[in-house]
Length: 167
Image 1 (cartoon, rainbow, N blue to C red):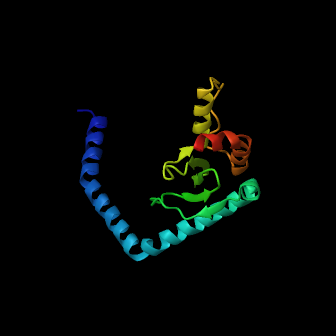
Image 2: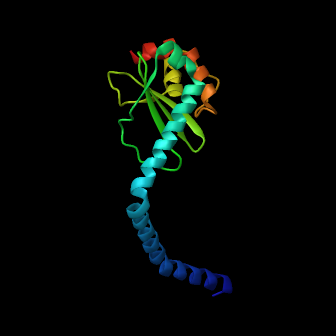
Image 3: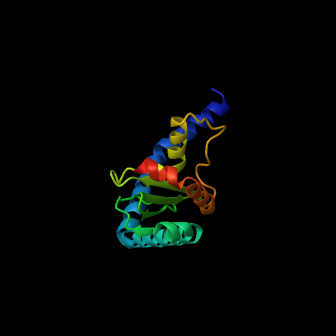
């Protein structure tokens, strides 16, 4: 048996020996964090993230408030908060809107009032509408949006089509 194979076997044995120990330490750390800190800090952090996202939406998409009387509503769906996830829900006359931001990516989804918990991403919805009309795109719509102004432009340009699709 050559020296390289012997080293690899030794490393494999060490991993098999120490893996349960590291898993136990990780589990213990998770329990301690949840009991001492996570139960109050995580919801507070999520609330701050959601408030910042709502402010960004208010500043970037003024037409929603000026032209469509948009209002923010409480998020009804329980969300497992990971990384820097922020979610806000908004209602306008035509449909419900959900804005999501995670890891620097921005998403906009819509739901009709007939099925208010079934959200569909806007660019996928527009692709489906174009497909129904026989329009084939050269490339996919930007998904996710690079910023909220880009999402605002897409919503503004396609508002009537989206409202009709959601009715």
